[in-house]
Length: 196
Length: 196
DNA sequence: CCTACCGATCGGTAGG
DNA sequence: CCTACCGATCGGTAGG
Image (cartoon, rainbow over all chains, first blue to last red; front, side, top):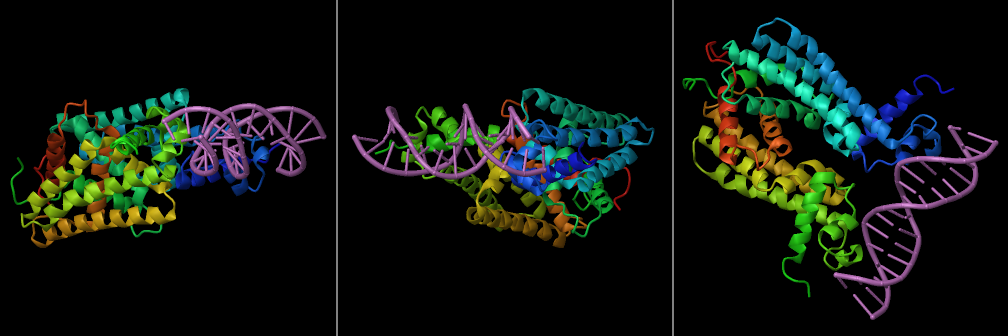
């Protein structure tokens, strides 16, 4: 019987390797070596290489969904909701940098069936953000011309984090979220001109 | 002697395949088949598979650099410069969607030497943006707390475009650039609160 | 978890 | 640009 945690260790090493080299450039021998075993031995724990990719991306998708749900369902005012949603989103990325990188960068390498599952979860997540933004527009808190565009801009900017955020950097996740929402809410211009 | 344009056709097909499947998931046989020849024949035109990846990403880097340079060197006011830089950046992406996708997604698959070349061009491009933003801060046109953060946010948001922009969509590159700068300059909040 | 191995496919080459 | 091929490596399996 495999020791508890063995599989977790394999998933963690896989995340590291997939995030650094990419899924296709990582071999089953790379993974098994990182786990201190031979390639054949890996198959006592997994059924296929793609299983690893799916499990990493699916866990990532669930983290995003579960951290946003309570915020969307809450009764805070829209600006506060946006702030809290941003913190949650950024926290998922910064707390799971490698898995997040795999989630954003490698999910398209999944075969059609499992790819569809991840796609659906991504869609659900985007819809939660869409609701959050449209509530803010309806209540008059946000002035947004094109909601879909605003949503894509926000999520693109936030998702880009996995490419430049390093734990060793000087910004905590909360600082990142603060600066992020500050720019998104108030903009970069000096504020002397009237809002159009 | 190879027909003029043969090599260009190979690069174009490679861009399509690399952007859709990724570099490592695309085989030399995929590319040669798309070009209507057998795998061995491809090597009459290229020296290695990696040559293709390098040439695509390097051209992409040059497009970004050359389109931004005249704007940074001009004497327009900072807000106008930002607008024009944004349009230029977005135009490069929308006019070269597949190459841009490869540039953003696959450049890390290059071996160390060529990877460094691309990395340097990316750094140069980022420094041009840094200058553009700090000019705006010095002149008082922009109110930016953390310039590096603002730059990373802007470029992340703009680069995300390759993941969702489709030519078939209803937004022209100019519309995209307009909405983009509008949100970045003025923010999403209703503007009733004072700027802090 | 190891030993020993498999068929398939990979990037690339030689000779024409 | 094709024919014919190569050594290396891939993901994965059987039996212990």
